[in-house]
Image 1: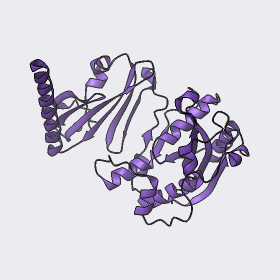
Image 2 (image 1 turned 180 degrees about the horizontal axis):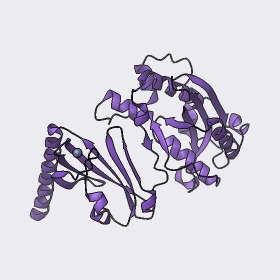
Image 3 (image 1 turned 90 degrees about the horizontal axis):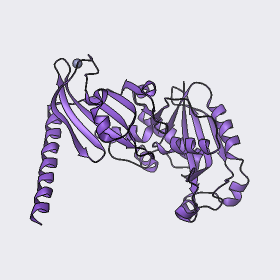
Image 4 (image 1 turned 90 degrees about the vertical axis):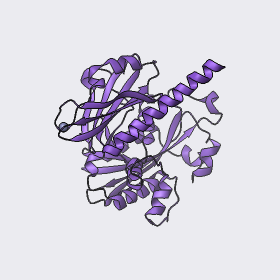
Length: 319
Ligand SMILES: [Zn+2]
């Protein structure tokens, strides 16, 4: 299997939302990628400029970072032709690697705009930005620009950034420097298309955690009432976990809980609600092992939230 390290450049309406096409707010103007083998060697490169159809004038923000302009783009080929050629170049056995989840979203939005066939589901990819974040900080919450990772690893900066193929090459070099031992296990699921039926739901155990991506629900409450969502099981022995802390809302879009399996120790559960344009939601639930301090931290969080709510109620009552 090869790694396709991909980077895209896109443009947007010059005049903000006014000139925006609702089906394609961002139009891809360049596809760049490198093909990397299992030893992290770059074995091939792909690069092509795309002649824009919707946003022919570059947005000022984008113009300043690019190394080319409208005249160069006008010489490019249409998206459909380039994208078809690119996907053929990818080959049969590969996994996409990108710096952040946006490139795959925009690729698929542009493909949908031209009514091209959808990429096969479920679509796994390696979010190298997230893998890097987990490497530099155990909570994985520091989102870094590619430039920072390149500088951190002392990778020579011979070529300018913000050319798709250069960025793809830099990303591949960062991947080589990271060479995580369990890379195959570190994949994410692309959520451009979410499950709509029970049969399409995704359950996966990888990266030392359990992940469940559900179908749609009309409301957050309806999702929380679903027994497959509410129940947490130890993914090592499949036994129900004794909840130490029931699900509680720790932000407007998520719930957390904690419990213990007698054989495999403490676990935390997290439910993230993903809002949809039709007013419905789907859920991404994860269960992962934690230690006793982890349980205490969640308990602490619950207490803080309760105190804050109490305070709010109090201020309202005395107003
Ligand atoms: Zn267990």
